[in-house]
Image 1 (spheres, rainbow over the protein chains, first blue to last red):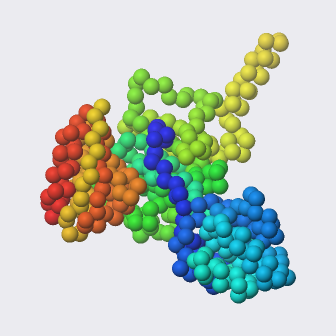
Image 2: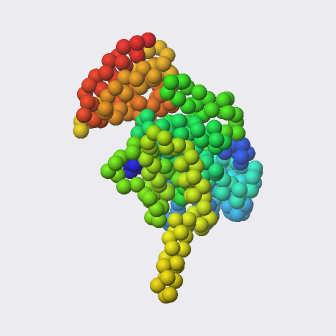
Image 3: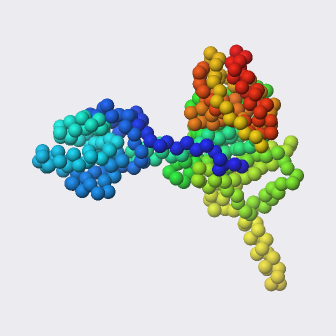
Length: 323
Length: 89
């Protein structure tokens, strides 16, 4: 399976407006100055608290991040003289700053707002606490900047294990998914699966907002799994636990017969357990995927049936040798 | 293994909806080559109706078609003529 050449989309930047749009409800955000700069780009998925910069130390000032102003910064600014404050802010504004974000409904001095208005640097005000602001913004930015790709595959939640079924067109991915749904499992996406790296360690499979849980079955046409089977048989996203590739039974190929060794496939830099399943008339692929998912869960719980059987056999042989 | 890439424009009024997508899939399935369509950095397999629908390619959209395989030229010719005739709509 070729997962190395997937076209990977990674955002170079996001406008401050997107952050406002997505986080306005959660953080109760409003723009109180610099509205004309709402399209300014955020390039880095991190934040900065500019305490030292306000104090006049501008070496290593992480100016390219969203600057969070909490109690410390706002009250520090309040006890500066007007002349000092202006000089310190001039120092900060000599750098390109994407935006300021104030927590706890803190109102800064008019001079600060004036300077942001003149330079078109948006100032966002949140009613929530500083730690809530910081954790939400970092998670939001990490999610926005994470690499994503779209793959021709089918994703099903089978016993809680996200199974990504891949294989050539016409091999029976959709039919396998349909049978899994019929057997009580849940469809995530058919044919077009968006894959997104999450927090550097897992891959989330998502349905596309255009097609949602529609599926094309050759001979019938387009059906909607949510309408036919109900909302309990679909999910919008699921973490990928297992990649199953279906291929036409090849006499020359060597298929895994013991399950003692494990294969992995690399998707967006994340290692996912991988199984190659040969398809032949009379093989019920849905049941094979089901048992693969259950076996995967067993392994995650630390139970490895193939290794245990082998160990038992070796113990038995050792005893026989002693006798 | 030949690889051809061409930029094509959707000309029919309703854009790439289900019927043109099905016509395109039927056409490219006859070829051995892999055919992919790209729009705004999203790439989908032209042998998948659902994939084509996610592009939401309206009239006037420019898409990049890539044919890769032994019959890439013939496949591209068939795809081009479908686009030019507005998928027969």
